[in-house]
Image 1: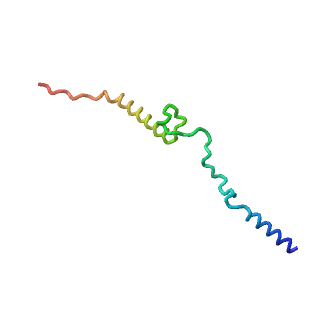
Image 2 (image 1 turned 90 degrees about the vertical axis):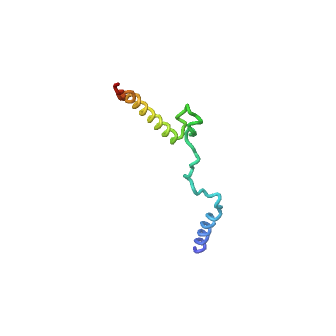
Image 3 (image 1 turned 120 degrees about the vertical axis):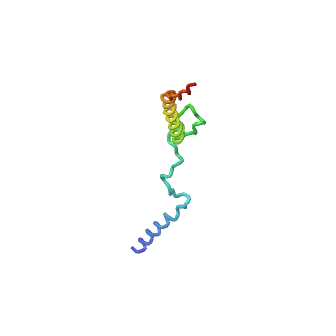
Length: 90
């Protein structure tokens, strides 16, 4: 009976020792290189397709566009109403 237990332990140790370390999978969920969907590109490479832009570029371009829109609206509605100083009478 003792020999049977020793053989079982030896088999258990040998099975784990037979598999080389290069074959063992260690990082099963580390598949960061697998992209799902379309590849994101810089906005200057595809300026007419905002769906393929990188998220950071989309945010920067959107904020710049909204800022330009609000500033031009502000200048349009308030810029022409400034009163000119009256010239000195002679």
